[in-house]
Image (cartoon, rainbow, N blue to C red):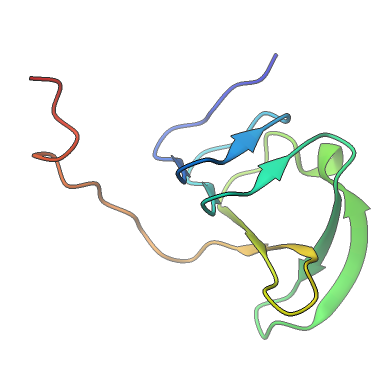
Length: 92
């Protein structure tokens, strides 16, 4: 089951093929399938390991982004809180 945790943000034209834990962010235009190779980065941005996205399923506080120079999908701990503009996201 593909599920989205609480307070997640999935950017425009992005998609997921894995369940996200709470407070995860997927940048605009990025599609993550279970077999996507993801480069894990530590807090200083250094390579930890390369794994398949399915290994990150249901984990909280992650930021998924694409490296603009190499094209690699990267994942690091998402330390920022995101608050949506309630006026823009109201269903009037």
